[in-house]
Length: 336
Image (cartoon, rainbow, N blue to C red):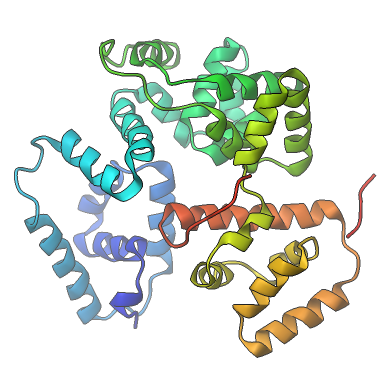
């Protein structure tokens, strides 16, 4: 049995979709992003032992929320803007809302979100570098990082510098991009303000998801071309050491999501302050076992440590996006 109050929003959505039947669930999923479909699909696959009371509670909660809204479909854009600004602040809300409203009309680039990174790289590698920068800026950072890794090495630095310099994209330019991708316009939106994609933060987010060796090389090359830009991107990147700024509750939630093996590898390259934070948020017995495992592990490759840290950071970002924790901070093989 699952206690409703302990269920995440994704789990509640999964219960709801399992309840409404295949046809209606399929219609709902059509309106979700690839990541949302994957998250809810995984939750649906993992659900078991749900009792009648839990299902009833989920459905009642859904009905209550629907009944709380009137005039559905009227003034949705203003309503959505007000909700997002209250939750995220004006700047962040503006960026997200622009993506949503523009994405509603940009079918070509939206379709890329369902494709493999290498396939997208093959599609865009012959396009103008600015087009490549726009595509990477618009897509989710982890997908953009995979695409960038699949592009020729000599294109990566130029793409990242163009992303960092982007100051929004005119809808008309996005329409032209849709024409390239789907041979059709997404609509005439010349009078709408530019969408908030691109910039130093977008570049930093993409680099956060890349292998450390590639990430370091790109940052170094960017600094050679523009030291101020390189430093700006570096400051905005969230690295493993920044987990020290996560509160105890967030660390505890994160520890429940990561494997012991990855944690051991990641902590081999961590400083003592971060290790102490991790130990503090474990039970005494679990902390002692982890310390023993760290001591008995012996030397490990730095590259293995970095891979484990990247995976944990990826989980932390996913949890941050879901509102489950708040991230702080910026942004021959060695042995540690």
